[in-house]
Image (cartoon, rainbow, N blue to C red; front, side):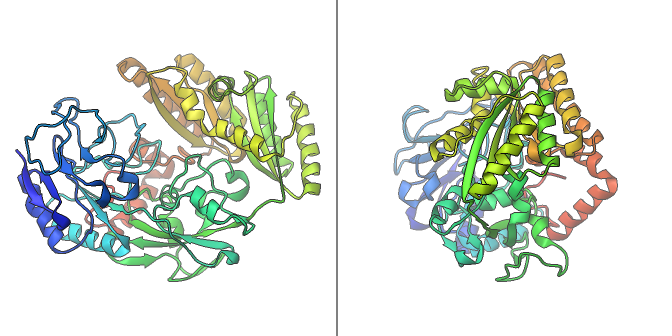
Length: 538
């Protein structure tokens, strides 16, 4: 049974009766300025395109499909039609199917089924988010369910989508960028992506180098502690975030380094900025980020080196770092991934363990770096190097690397992908990579390997038949062994993807009970009602 409630601007929303009064209560307080979406299985909501944020404007209407165990009828609702109106069949133009994953999240590659939220609230600005969280705190304090999660973003260890039947807060798209670019920092708000920022910086001699592959939101990258191909030289998001503006779970507004402050270093009190970077949406909404910008290099050169074995390629990486060659990118592909990437991107790439290398510097220093690099590659039985400095060649190479996920999925069309990562000390990297390769082969799994080996971080993209319980169990067992192998080597169970839901047990093994209890104390102090992404990380 559904009932109708009226939103501002005459928009009608269909939902369960118990949600109607709750929506009217929120609407009467003017907490949000956009329509609400009940994500209850089988519910329908009418959202005219001109009232929706930019990234939600593709469908004319949203519709949530039922879970596998209780399918519901899917139909498009005509404007002005009430419950039970006749509509077109599901899958026709203008229908959005939430399906697996969070409403509005786009394509979801997670292997676990997500739970749709009861309500999607689009709060505009930090004031809207603050009011929304204050409302949820009041509802939760009365003993009712209610949880919030930031806007969905890509993740690999199921960081987003809270597995909780509560409300979801979201930020309207932002294209604003503030601050004085000449000071070497930039201030961005939610919705600004890394590519948009770098486009805005053209002509300034500055850029933001953290590159996770996807054109992700910068506030989302801060929330997940994103990393990427340039981390070996420029660092991850953590050292590149100078300040954050956060809406806390009780609705208060926090500037983690103080309002308007942009110091390159500080020793005043606890490092609150680092606390929220990588918090995976469990401690608050990030509504602004002050980022460290870097000078553009005078010259850039890229090359590809192939090796007779995985061990030789990784050993070369270790020697490059030990020789203090200021490499900007050093990416590893095993022979399976090299073959998949070459075929998927239609590039000639040897079917062998491969390193993709990029150097930054002045033209004079670049020549010295290239000579040093060639010597180390030859010492490890690598191929001869052909350097490219043109923008087109560089972009083609890194586009191939960033499409590694899709290249891996193409190895088994119609199958599911699961990406997991670990990070270990550089000195232990060759042993751990070789052991992992042997484990994959012994397990009979399709799992091409790729990694940001310059900082000891690598991934396995596991492609499997999700309808085969036995293969799915082997995937799970492998990922647990991989995480524990990294821990035994003095590393971490995740260097980039985060804990989310999938690595909570490994987190306890990594930190110990005292460490986990400390994290829980921080969570309880900031979010005593467990509103923010409940069930994640802890």
